[in-house]
Length: 539
Image 1: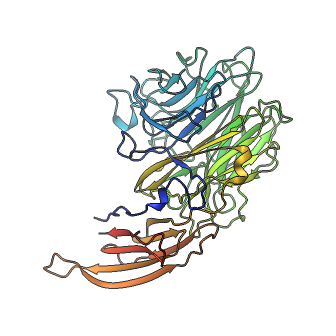
Image 2: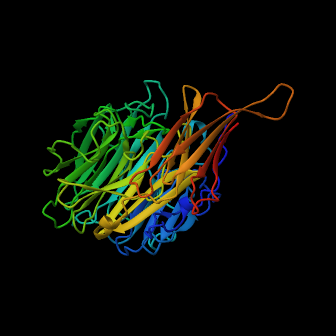
Image 3: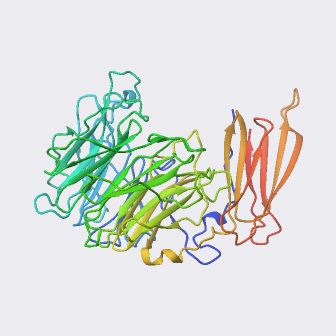
């Protein structure tokens, strides 16, 4: 059996303060043995609209995080509900500071082929996210499966103010390839702060399959305008769809195809279990000159690698401008930008789009987290790297989640993401928009991160450094009638990273055998890191 032994000795990587004196992003999950925290992913976050120092977040499966000091420290909790909790968390604050926590169910007695996700559960908090109600639910429809929810609220209109809106995908039978099983977009509303929900209705005019792939209808997100109009966008059949309701969600129009999505929504990102380019939609309800403008953000690889795109509409979605590529690295350079999410500051109309970004990774392996900010209605963006610590995923064989998240309120941007190193870590950076230019442009010096991939069935080891490092690779053989391994051959490498270099230095080591390999990474003549030894053992 082939396995990777955990990396040890990477102390500097997770220090609270970098050698440059700038505070790093904050790791939120403090104990990886905490319930449900071995592989937390798909994090969602919201800033309380009534108390902006309070930030509430969640992650798969039942992780619940609360900060009362602008994200400097986090309390770890477990979310429970009589209807069960099974991930896909979505956090949202309405204008009064009511916090909504939407997620999938885990209905007792149902377990076959994910049949237990038979409704969308919503729990609410009126005490700044410290505790949540037992919850209510929407969408129960026999044995059909309800998946991937999104939630929004009407904070402005006179007629529907205070309403909450849910959108999601209903599967006849998830993961089935049979043509008789279909998927569709569903919708429900609440007028009592989530205590009860209306009977769900289908708002998509077409249907998709149930394979959970490009021809499945998925990723339905909503936004609510100042007059109570509800906008919804989703993906499927290599297209992006849009619909709207002008009567509080009671009736909907005819689906409009906005754009083709050449990659489909199920995007293939190297060294990642799976990814998607599903759309997110927001609307400007501020008093800015762009009031009423709709923004749609999604991912596609039409230029040969994964990129982030945005388009906007000034006429309630009837017409849209040409899509704009948000990430400003070289077009078609083979570097991936993926899993975008978007938030709008309703006090200013400014826009923030957050996504994973690999432009600094020579081999398109290690990921940064970038936030692109626009203060002029999406005409121009400035990108900022939110992480000082090297980030990455667990690889092609471990699920790393289908999204990250960002919220933006009163000039404050709060981004949340995950990164894998021994176990999955949840990170947050909360920063004022006026302080973005002060983010240090160089990754924290002294880090080492490795990634194991299997290419043509043989291990390939990628090593990223922000310090000079020596690497030794030793192959072993096992003689007949002996329990001890014997050294077969040895190779030496060097990563001559120049301190202060923006970005990271990488090494790719293809192995000539499948197992019995040890790689040792040591600092190169550095007093600061002399006690550190990092290793990978493939047995």
